[in-house]
Image 1 (tube, rainbow, N blue to C red):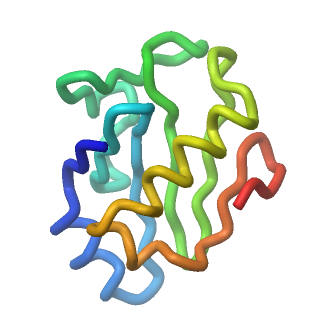
Image 2 (image 1 turned 60 degrees about the vertical axis):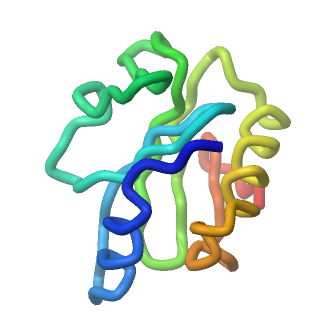
Length: 108
């Protein structure tokens, strides 16, 4: 899995009351500031679009919690698989123990 923004993730998690965003799919993940819209955060191989268009999931990250927005193309099991791959990446150990929600349901 290709990770974009790992340095941003590390520095942001060191601050109190953090809130930032993420787009991700089977091939990669991109972490970026909350001031950027998910649909404007396109990276090679990662594209989130409103109305479940695009090939990526949109998520927000706040203290100890990742909330993933619904996307019609991604089942709960598919999202769980993506999240497990993300959390196993060596650069993502800082996210260990975070609660992961999809459509308001806890997955991980």
